[in-house]
Image (cartoon, rainbow, N blue to C red; front, side, top):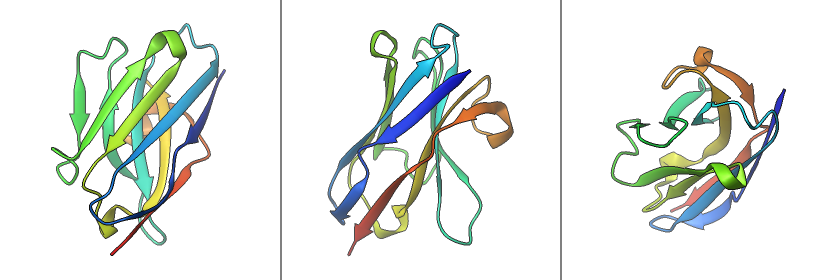
Length: 121
């Protein structure tokens, strides 16, 4: 099994930045792709960004392209989401996930509990 714990969320003003971290434990030797998703109340969980095991391939939702950057440090068992130029519509709970896929929720097997990001105008 893999356990994932997100951190780094909080309250930030529009235009500000946050860096989310996802710490993995358990079977971290498995070569999982990692993804970030977010979910606002009453809405579906939406894809944000994903990265392959070695980090050579990255994928972004159109809404965050150019603002967010996903990265990973396998030696530290940690995946990051750098969020710049935050907008109020980015407000959501952010989840990290480990799996075999890229953009789809169904392609991920393990999920963290989420961290709240709130962007004020």
